[in-house]
Image (tube, rainbow, N blue to C red; front, side, top):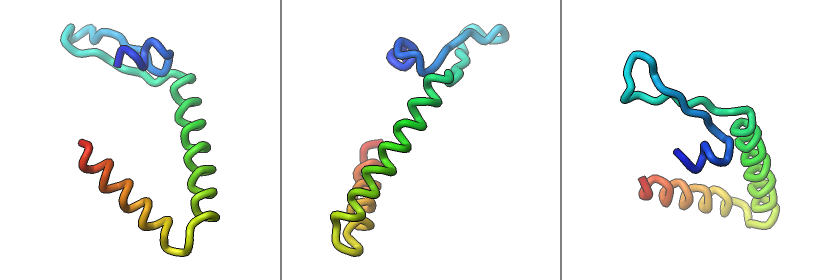
Length: 72
């Protein structure tokens, strides 16, 4: 979380009711980066859709989903 704070994507603060708890807030910069990431992914997916044979994109996406699920 410290790296996200250093990059300005989130801000943290203390909970006045519980010192063990931290509040996180996504900053405007954080939301901008999410939008940039979404646009980048959408452009990449569109390029893959043009380059791959029909049905292959779905296989790639399924494989990526499985890899991501196994990473957790």
